[in-house]
Image 1 (spheres, rainbow, N blue to C red):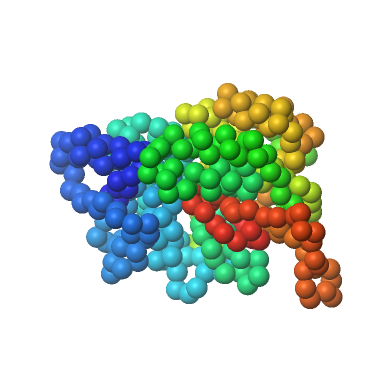
Image 2 (tube, rainbow, N blue to C red):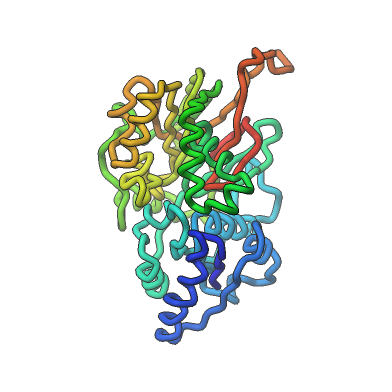
Length: 371
């Protein structure tokens, strides 16, 4: 079953399906069906309504950008559970495979897993090629309830402000993809930094040298991801507690941040050939965290240009970057209460918060727990 987002990539997803994908499917005598989504959440709703989707279809394929893939993945995971998902849940593994034929604006997921060309992606799907992919979950700090899953990018600060500025109705209607350039320019000149009180549980696999700009990059049959997959192959359920039996101590960090980024992929694209986190792995069970402290205009511009040229963040930002691999992240926009204190202390009026950019979708809650 193919799900087509008709507005992905400025409308190219539907054209791609009719002109290139369907002819190849017919030539291969492959039975298929497809749905053109009509509203946000359409694919997820359809998946949850089907009585036995695992027997009816070999796989569910997104034709579009990262957003429609995330929507399908969210529906597949929810469908496999017997109870409400919280931050303490152990989740049952989905029984149906998901795939993507990239046809969006950035196609970060497709680029990261080596499927930048739509026809090549279709061939891999028809051959039955598969790989494991990390999935992050965003929960509310207050009650542990699930907000959203993500499979690539979660950002707070510059990239979330850019998303919010680009979502204005008149920009979407008249400027299309060009609106991202205008929104990015506005965000740059405002150059806002937000207070953050951060806790994270580092991964045991992170090593003593901190987070590297260069190293073993993820690829097909990646030894790092394969090792993690072997450790988990004996269980039919997966959880968000990490892959190590060794409990790591929580670390804390606070300050004013231009960017707070959590990724499960390197997030590369045509506009960023190595991505935001060049050494991130698709299936290592870890989040790659990058905390960018408040930057001046010159250093912010240098950071953005370097990212577009494939230069790692540490070599550009130096002491303004705190980066690591972790199993969990807790972010608060206000100082957390002390032991025995019920309410959050008052903050000064100049302190503020913003939204989160979760795989291109807006999450309004600033205080979140990520696993």
